[in-house]
Length: 383
Image (cartoon, rainbow, N blue to C red; front, side):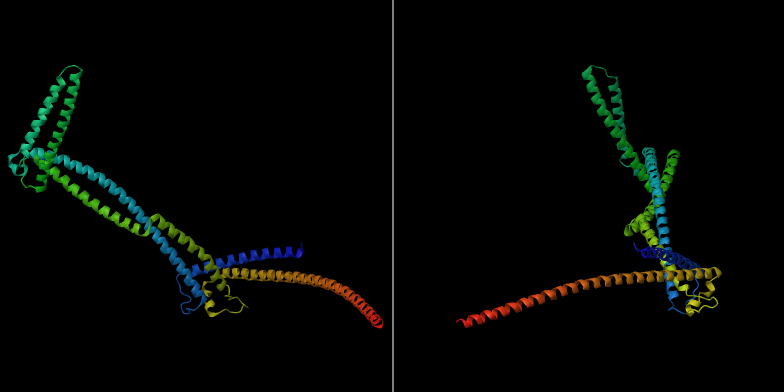
């Protein structure tokens, strides 16, 4: 392999390394200057400046990241709120169930206490007669079960006894449940009428407690309805725009994509800023570039010198590569010319050979024609 190609490879690698280093310095310079500029407006008097356009692009990227970050925070807050509401609602539902059961139990007690009182016949109505009938049935069934328990007999008698006992127990349970519902119904009627008149002391205490539990249940239901409504509002928002996790992932991907754009913006701004040369002996830049002067420091000038040195090195690498490529091209062209000259020589030899062959063919033709003429003359003379 031609050694010059190895030299080109080395120069290309050095050029790539210098270019990467230059871009790194330009990116750092651009980022540093943009951070120093902050919220100031150095190019506001010249809206057409290229630096101003890059600065605006940089700020738009910052704004997009800030907005996406805020959306993520809001979604995370809503997600936390939703989980908190779920826990609160679950606890409230348990409390509601407990309180409802408690109210149910005390309502039964209240009905049982009020039903015998003649002062509340307008509330109890026919319930007293129902109570008496149910109590009689319960007592009869309890008595019957006692009698069945005492009965003795053989195997068949034992089977009949068990069947009767099972039926009696079932009827007893049903009648007791009916009696409980009767007491509950009477207690609810009294409780719903909010009677001002308090019955006897025992019923008064029960009524007061029942009212407290009822108020407590109403408060729980109001709180529960409020929490459910708030959860529904958050859930509907999520349902309309996708799940929180999916939306957060989308915003995170967007932030990552936007952050990837910063590097290009930094390099562009740094490249433009590198044309600013306030150092002695340097040609002054465009007016809008000079507006960067307040944001430069001595360290930045050192960076500019490194960039300038790298530009020189890159140009030297490129020139070296072009020179070697020119040398390789010359050699290639010379080789092609030599090859073509050899081809011409080959063709000329072929032409010479062909011309000699043609000359020989012409001589043979001439000799044949002479012989033909002689033969024709002979034929005419001997007719």
